[in-house]
Length: 251
Image (cartoon, rainbow, N blue to C red; front, side):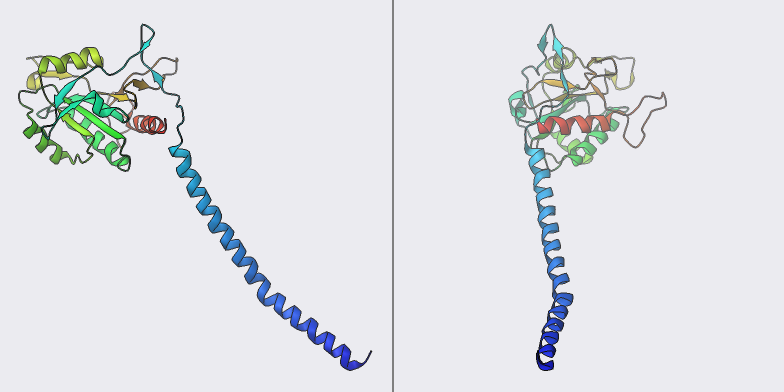
């Protein structure tokens, strides 16, 4: 074989070597980046799919004589003057509270916590709140409208409701087992629980279980997440409520 031929082979080998050094890493890098992007997109899609897929939660039903307790029928007027019934909440996960706009003690704290929850789930059209006034003679739709604006209530599924006082008291004390009552000896003349009830998409009252396997039934609405505990050492349950709302939204 001539030296000229040898030099030709050496030249070709050198070109191939240079090509490999220059182009192969770029091809590998491009493939890697494309795979990364593809994998990232796939991960995001799976995350969305997982959340939208119906999934049974570990939250229990509140059974009365072996029958799951459901929200009873109601019909009241909201802050926009519209009639709202339990049917308007079907297909939605929602929180129930009983309050009044002139409450000087726990109500402001309860509604500040609910506004925080509202903002947490602002992207969910099937989340709502039902706030029943226990002082309907004062809390007209117009008064409730001003109250909603004051607290930054923007969720279209958050209804502040007013109507017949006896019907509201019965709904609270019997329908939800959340205490409300009149008491002239206390400030503002009314007493009521600071608890929230959590309702699923089918109108059933749901909750998690305590350490003994019993349903907690309610969530304390007075202590904020930031406070963590009150002066009596009671722990906040807003973070717990948020977790359970998310669970029911997946069902």
